[in-house]
Image 1 (cartoon, rainbow, N blue to C red):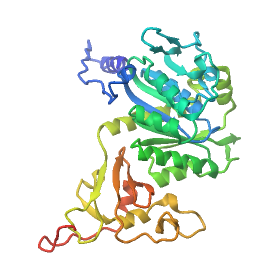
Image 2 (image 1 turned 60 degrees about the vertical axis):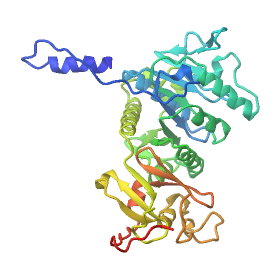
Image 3 (image 1 turned 45 degrees about the vertical axis):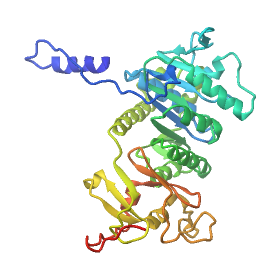
Image 4 (image 1 turned 180 degrees about the vertical axis):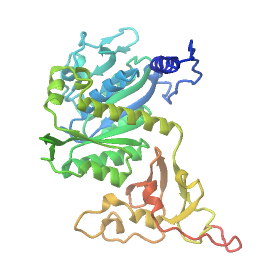
Length: 410
């Protein structure tokens, strides 16, 4: 807000005939949907989860540099390190006070601070890394996140731990996560784990707004070399309709800065890699703004049976003027790209048992719009599909019967 006020006065004041500038901002801050039980987060407007579901792909590096880039853009930012087994923030940042403070009467945790960003990590609790069972971990993370007094924040970045288990589900269910940024590397092995994470977020109605592919390439004499192959990030974008892909180079300074406690975007804010993080942050801001405007489409059963086709779906897309059209549910199920493996028969043509063909009259059990790009569909055989609006639009469209022919659905 202050940055907008400053720039508005600067640009308008440069006009030759302008003698003074007064900026009056009437827009109200975005409010969140935090439950009353999470009092410490009532001032947090947006929660961004940075996730990989696989260790060692540079998720914490992405989290920290994204957070400080947003802060440099003028936003109020906090970081929550949700990995109690291997907390990263104590190594990647250098706060003057490296121990969290707790109010003995209220039990409220006060974040420590580094370079203007509030940070909370189990590594700052004076315990190092944890050795404990899963249920205890979920309870600990829940307590640390919800009892912290975060104050007024534009963005809280959650550095998610690897996996798709109890901890991840707890985080997604305790607080309303605005969006997720998925981190991967070019290898197929990374794609397999990251795909599970995208499905988890979709099932929990959390939209993925960007894919960051770390260790994508390095340059020698202007020539790009890709030692770990290519395609993982692009495949996530293609199969799940995630709107943005960022391929990050292998840069020694990036890991070196993380090891010395000063994020790269702070040490070299004008560098090429910092500019890439600037692009990621800008897209996150833009996509969050789009989410506030509402979904780009909708999907529901053709209960009026205007097509005469069993289990037809009624589709409305903003890109097509909001005019409804109809497709077969079976065609949407078969369009799932993630179920197809190169060199094999199309697995999308079969149910989860891999033997039974998808019935022509199959109907979804539940459909939920995910962000503004896709629909999460639960099918009777237990399959959870993420169908993008672009993917649905490519399905064969059904003709609408004449009004006199239309019959109620059974």
